[in-house]
Length: 209
Figure 1: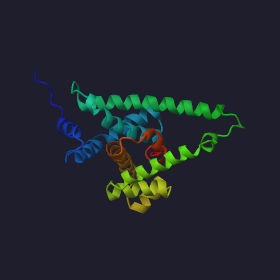
Figure 2: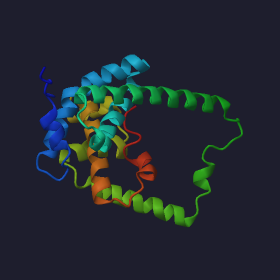
Figure 3: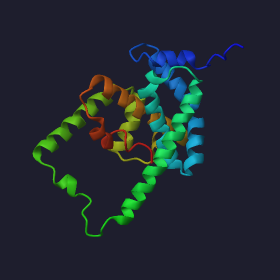
Figure 4: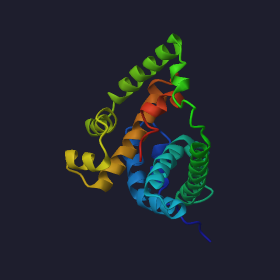
């Protein structure tokens, strides 16, 4: 019996070559092909539209990072949906921990104390990270750069972004998710010394709410 050929095989192969001309088109095609199904699985698992959008962003970021571990023993879609389920479970666990932490926080505890305790060296490092993230942003396409700037510099809501850019709410959310992924790719390839864990709150981590 012949094995069924994975319909995504050519796109996956192109996504394994980040430096090729086909990479961006292939990754965006995969994203467009599966984003609604990924969202549906996450939403059914979590029951929250905001958390589901976070999972969409996290899932495709993980796909990009872990694609080399995909050996083709199953369909790409099967592998992808497994990541979605695991990410949804992790998201639900994080939400539960965060909610317990908020309830347990003493009333007189200063939540901003760690930032206030920063010394000059820490501030200098944070400033350098912001400059490097800004440099990475400058390499994005104008559409992706614009939506990131409006979202974070102007603090626009999704509805405000939709009105400003003349887009549907769904397009705003998918474009913002794409912008996060593209920015992370650029930071990792152009600034490998950058600690994305530190930079994330000002770039991708605050992405979907």
